[in-house]
Amino acid sequence: MIGSIPPKNTVTLNLSLKIEDRGHWASKTEFLLAVAGNVVGMGNVWRFPYLCYKNGGGVFLVPYVVFVVTCGIPLFLLETAMGQYTQEGGITCWRRICPLAEGIGYAGQLIQLYGMCYMMILAWALFYLTFSFSSELPWASCNNPWNTDECNVAGRNLTLNGTQHSNSTSAATEFWEHRVLSISNGIEETGKVHWEVLLCLTAVWIICYFCIWKGVKSTGKVVYFTATFPYVMLLVLLVRGLTLPGALEGVVFYLYPDPEKLLDPQVWMEACAQVFFSYSTCVGMLTVLGSYNTYNNNCYRDCFMLCLLNSCTSVVAGFAVFSVLGFMAHEHGKPIAEVAESGPGLAFIAYPQAVAMIPLPQLWAVCFFIMVILLCVDTQFTAIEGIVTSVTDVFPRVLRGARRREIFLLLFCIICYLTQIIMVTEGGMYWFQLYDYYACSGACLLFLSIFQSLTIGWVFGANRLCNIIQDMTGSYPNVVFRLCWKYLTPLASLVTFIYYLVELQPLTYNRGYVYPDWAYGFGRLMSLSSIVLVPAWALGRLGTTKGTLKQSSLDSTDRYSKRINNKKKIQKQDKLYLIALL
Image 1 (cartoon, rainbow, N blue to C red):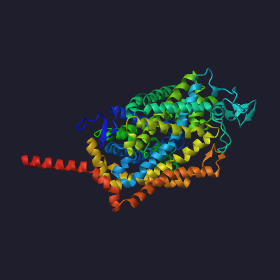
Image 2: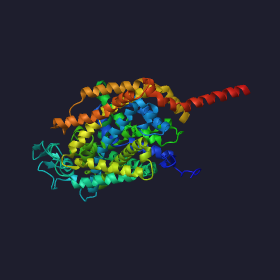
Image 3: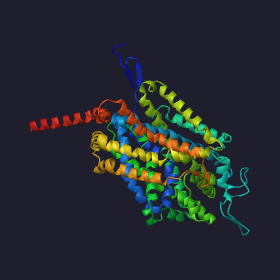
Image 4: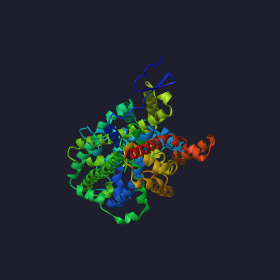
């Protein structure tokens, strides 16, 4: 009826189609917790501490802080501010900022899509959690059906009656390889589906779906628990770890400085890659979360708070991890270097083996795997939210309506779940590593960082972005941010990207299994699929848009600059009026 008022939270188009409003966070706390939950993940626990001890202990913090300042914080602010200003997802924000660079948005979402493989970590952690309630932890003994004759509780180089058994394996390793993975001899041997892990995978997908099925309304409530409780568990494990014998040796080993490592380019490359992984930059996730802020939210201050929280969590997690590893090395009489692991080897072999030796092992195993699950679950469901929001913003008339978004989310989860069934087979670990090494590689993120910072720094304009941030927050960013967006971030990313490609080695499993050629080809194809999208989209845009290069890249930019220009005109008029009155 003419003159009727549309329902609340809807936008009416063509007098017939109703599109639901995107919505906003109910409070600033929800935004902070959602971002903290997304950026603080397993990389802080199982990757940073290992890199720290491997690359010179305390001196590793030097290149780490350098890249945090030159890449991490500037990109964090850039992406959050883009989302908050445009109120758009990871794809359409580039359509508003610089249409020529919209391929960056598509590439970021493709990497996020490949990253759905990390749901397997959740499934494995849930599998371990169920066994943590056993009267005897199954990875603490060699009396199980899956154990071999080479099994022993301590692990490698066991000496019995004066004879050294160098080929022995730990009970925790055999539980991981024979019970959890039931791993085959190669990626060609798919084998049967491990139905228990499949049930765990089903459960975690259902959990993630219901965490975000109502958009930010449900996500904002869930993160109050998922983003805070891991810190409780981390604190409990830290206190317990520091009270164990041998903990001090573990902490010293973790941070003992080796200044010569600063001359090794590999150390700087790994520090840069760690910053990109742990800060969730270049994949559009921060843009999506920032897009649900109100226009005048102080994202400038939030950026510093969240980046400080992220990096401090990494350092503290190192104390919790290496105090326990120091205890295990002390009990077995081994060097800590022999028990230190990174990635799944830490979460599912080394740490479980260590907690099995502590009094009340079931309690500490439950605490640890609850922490792992919560660290992973909010990272994953916010990643799903990022993809769904970005696609919904591309097709708002189709997907942003009553229950249409929920149906799209359900279909997305089902399709991703079905594609991951191959990862719960006997050859699944080979597939998981293939995705992790190639599809979600640091090279892809570095490539996007180069073009993202160049686009904002030179095409859109670093000064223009600073004016936008000042308009939203009232604070004008430090000159360092403009230097980073224009020079330091793209230069650091380019140098690291080139070194990464030069030093790139073919993927192997357990330092022994070599993948077949077709697997390497498939992996490289996944890497190229996200990289090629950026120049391909730019060329396509140039070929289909009339006008000059500047018009192709800035037509939307100029439209979005009107607010700033109009505000400056008003301020100038007010100033002249005040002078006239005086």
